[in-house]
View 1 (cartoon, rainbow, N blue to C red):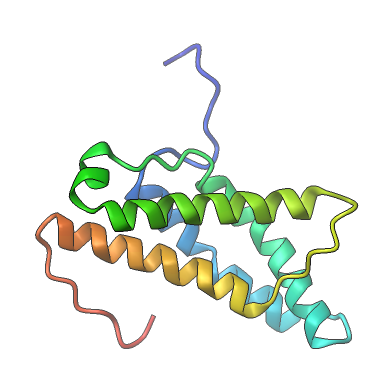
View 2: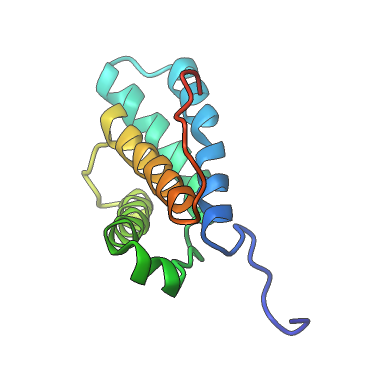
Length: 134
């Protein structure tokens, strides 16, 4: 382990999903404090800033083989989430990208991460009672 490169965004499954979700407050703060003029520009600027800080937690997202076997539908969603976030990061890094992101795009990713975490709990036999306030 001493010779390996550090993994700044962490490595794991539920751990990385949890770290990814922590950045939701950051997204909302950037969205509220953005100084651009139009709603579309505000949402896009906030999404770009958010993806730079949140995406590193999914770089080393590992979906356990037992979860893939026991809950294949959620394993596919985890793969989709990682791909979508990495695609969004790649588009943000591309100077030629004309992709614009909205509030709905970001919340779809965050909601998917929550859904996967709840499914992981259920898969491990934990009763999930969704929060009324997050």
